[in-house]
Image (cartoon, rainbow, N blue to C red; front, side, top):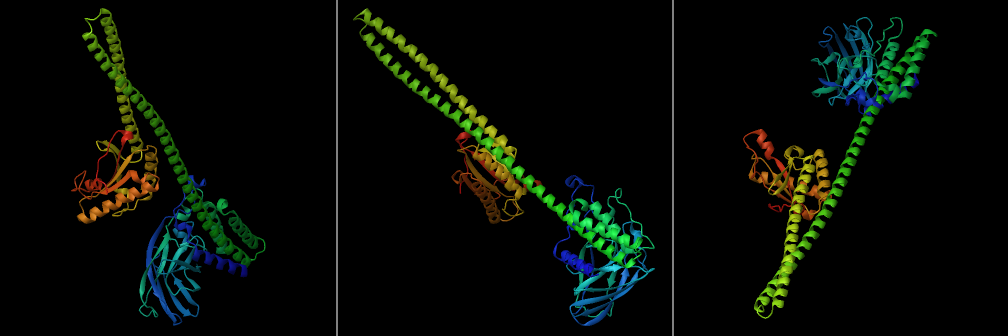
Length: 540
């Protein structure tokens, strides 16, 4: 019995220090690669009265009454507050077998519930006919008492099959106040949520109940996935269960069989708890890996955008060089034309002097005209190249708009590209960017960095609810938050300005909730020479 006592102490310590993982979100079969766990972890809440029993004030009594699940049940408990612990002597009558609530339920468990909702297993309520007695000790001082139907005695969280609750009597002594203790329950039916794989355990009327409970606990742990996630602990539970069966069937030693059966049930419950904890760890690891993958993809997109911007910059440089060459050619042509005109005037004055001089002047004029024609053609070519450069800026602006629009709504205006950061990307009535907003702004920053020379003005807007001073301050704070985040992502601070416009520039009617939500926004006005738009706006 000594190893069994140590195991009970260790299990109690674990339950007190570590949150029960079955109260967390359940993993789906696709996430675990295993059949659907038998414990589907939906929980519900219930309240009961908790009594503060004065420390070392002697004994008092409290009644039990049946719930709607077992209305005929009655009983009482004697609560004796002693040095270091509280002793509870419980007597229950008019009880019926737990199997009536489903094949998975085999026994009853008495629970102590603290005002904070923590449940402590005070022991198994074993029926003798229609009545039961239980002597328990606990280190709790303020607690309520409930009785639930369970699949085995070693469970660490009560089910919602609550069949009896404590009822405060008029002569109940030692109470300071009555507190409603709100506590969580495993929803009825979750132990056999997957009935196609659950193998119901039949209670042997000649064998100890603990043996059937142990077999049921091992079956529930198996369906929860313990063979995969808690193989060592689950194997110990299976070995203890086999030893219990051997003691009963071969050695006819009922006491040893009960001892090993209780240890098997406790080991199976530990395996189930470990299983759910490891499932949660797997889910968290998968979420971290997915986040890393998304970040890598965002960086790859930013690098691709930077390469495209570099190529566009090279093409613009070539176009500028061609334009300068055309300007020089046009200047040379104008100079040549002027010289030709001077020569023609001189030739006209000297025409009478000699036909030979006139012929020479005429030839020089024709040569100059030909040069002027070539210069005019060069000027026309330069103008076409200028128009092509403007078209390329327009194409570059549209490409930037499309890239930004994949992340946030972006439209083109005379002021530049307007990127809309909606109100839902901020905490309510705050200027802190939500995690989803920071992820989107990180992608926007990567795209902006790929287009050197851009100007960004951050403009904050609000709806008409609230005072002018409050709306102005909130719009400035949100605009500043976006500007600071862009700077933190590497966008040059000298190219980013921020301004709060309050409620002065609505884009929809403030008479409706939908209109007000449209007005609560932060806009990025993107302009600059690279995309052919000189932005205008208020700076601060």
